[in-house]
Image 1: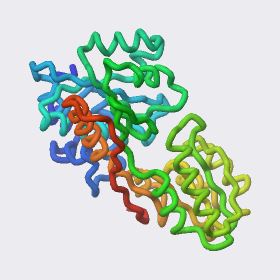
Image 2 (image 1 turned 60 degrees about the horizontal axis):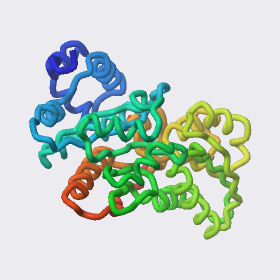
Image 3 (image 1 turned 120 degrees about the horizontal axis):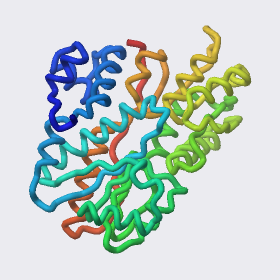
Image 4 (image 1 turned 90 degrees about the vertical axis):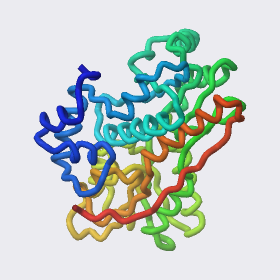
Length: 325
């Protein structure tokens, strides 16, 4: 059904205009969370492919690269982030005259490293862009060492002759965000991300640097990027702290819900997801431009395919205050 569905079909099924569907897919402001969720539900149900994606897929040239994305079965903000990655990547692929194919983790989870390499070769893809690589995924670490494959990784610390890394300055972003709510000598709770995440380590280093500089009394807890886990931690111990710094917006939402009204405890998040505008108020966050990161990843892949050596690309971020819509 995916190839037959148009943006007008999605709009009709969601009960909105085609313009509204386009704005939701490109994360424009001014769209209610209810409308966004309704549109995204139809997109997932129908497998709708935006025009920019369809144009890239119709290419007859052998300029194919694979776009690999980890999908969490407990999808929350992941829908928004991955959709923006994909839209940015396919929009840039059209400009670069590249054909993109999207591969999800379920397609290769039972394959060995050697079988994974053969799988990508069977797709006639000599370059793969990986979103969400973790430290324990040996398949892609092995793939990175394979000379016949070029790779772009987003938010992971891998570079080499055939490997480019694309990310924001995670360490700096966490430092700057926490600095907005942490005062000299404060007692601060830091909710870090998953143990196997590269960004977990980078963001923690930024927090630790600020703690040393401002003599913070820092406690680090494993929030796992989970709203529910953050809620439990803050419900049990949150009132002991002056500020709570969260390594993701979802955890900031959970922390905000767990605190009683008027607690005066300052909270920050990380990522800048749209949900924050509906679930929390007056929360500092580090906003990432996921659409731009997707485009930058394809630009990097195109350079690798032209013989350029791997590099580290830093995409700008902004620190901002989220106000309830």
